[in-house]
Image (tube, rainbow, N blue to C red):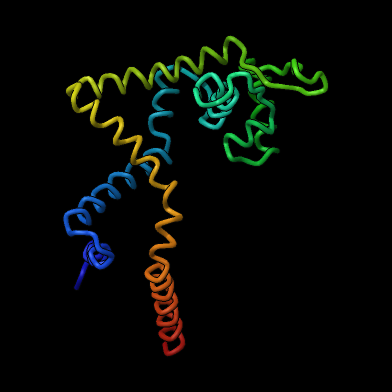
Length: 207
């Protein structure tokens, strides 16, 4: 009986991809899925808070990073002002939840509310020195561990890996074009789900 990997390999080869690429994609997907599970559990973040003695949960730290976002995003206007709605947008959370988390950080002394220099009617958010210290410490923890890991790589490996990782991270940008190209194949995949549902339905009725 063919395995799921065999089925995926057949699907890719039928779409014109050679077997070697199919096997490589399966390996990449396995790595990414494992990475995704680790990111979902926030393992590194939890380790950082324990090591740094921070009595904060990851949602609170995320809010501090969201407030500090302009200083850590070179492609973002450094003059952008951060409001509660900005935090909600950057973290992809409900505005009411963002408001509650921001209030926690303000009450804890990690953030403060200020008056916008552009519009005196608008309230903006800033990090206090304590909030900036948390951001710097968490990022410093991460860089120390990353630096130690990559120090075992040759300069040539690092120089090869970084642009390839950047290139890989952009693959979703072209996914819509690929989706149009394989519209028939994707439609057949959708139909396979319907067929399986019908089989389950028929089996439950006969049982």
